[in-house]
Length: 104
Image (cartoon, rainbow, N blue to C red; front, side, top):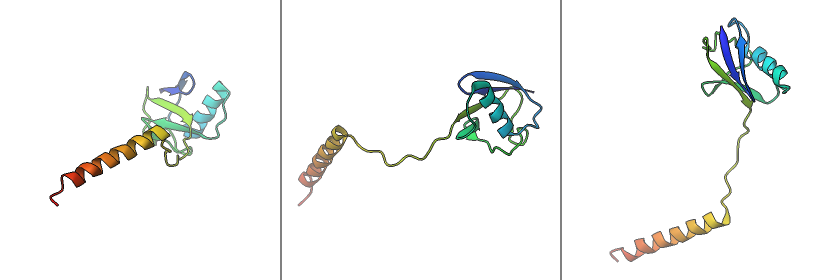
């Protein structure tokens, strides 16, 4: 069966379906001069396990796989000064309206 693999470039591979995801990743790394470390293969946005065979993963003929860098977890987003000042101003204005409209 024929597969499309998108990394830096789009590659067309002829496979049997018995190949593992790690073999596909290694082949694409060889074609593009990349390393296989910190790379993950995606099928429709879902990561595939390296030891799984393509047929077991649900990869069908003419499917497109993506080889991308592994994303590390991100921490809490830091607010820039303008955003923080706007949020504080909005909170003060909202609180003032609530106090002003209270029945007391």
